[in-house]
Length: 100
Image (tube, rainbow, N blue to C red; front, side):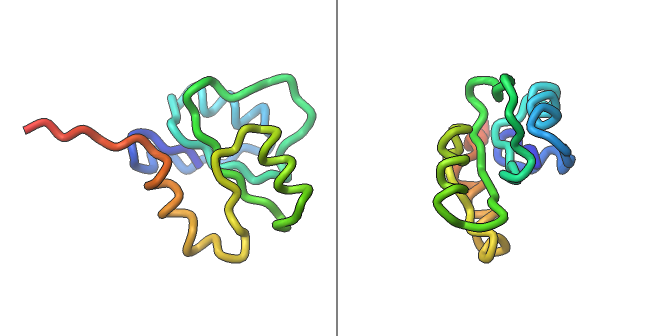
């Protein structure tokens, strides 16, 4: 999932981390939500300025290390995803500026 300026601009799946990097660049995303099991050993990195929300299969020490290694701002609990996802997006996405 890719977020731009506080709203979900695109809900596109990426099968691999490399594909997620390509889509994040193309969509100019502010926040990218990654399933940690899609992370493979890759020399690609998300562009600077993109915030990562990580979702693990299991919320354990290995998931915490993986999330830290990719620079995730937040590791969400898969068991509470329905309650945590939207607030996390709103917390981390840049706020819109409303001109009057």
